[in-house]
Length: 121
Image (cartoon, rainbow, N blue to C red; front, side, top):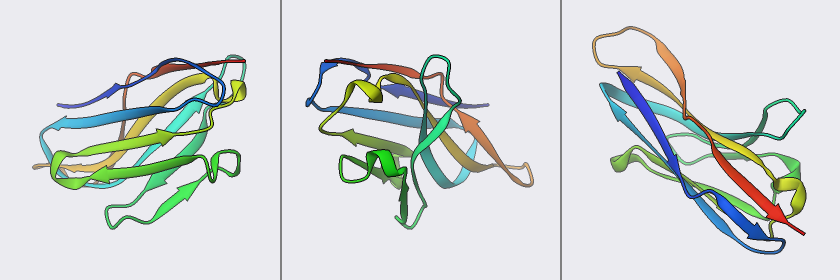
């Protein structure tokens, strides 16, 4: 079994900051890419940021310059540092990991349960 557990969401005023964390655990052989998506009410889930095992990153245009994704490979953990938050950043944030499991061929994507981020104006 594999679990991704997120933490760090909450309520913050516009202009504030939050840091999200997500740790993967279980029968993991290797994690390639990790990332964060978000879904606001009535909208589709969208990519926020992604990072490869080697540290290459990709960001949605709407968060460039404000959000930073990082990871600790030794801890199977990915972080999302969010600065200058805006009300439009309000959403449920989900982390994901593309990983290989011990004894199982192929890589699969796993998701966390989501954490609510609410930015008040």
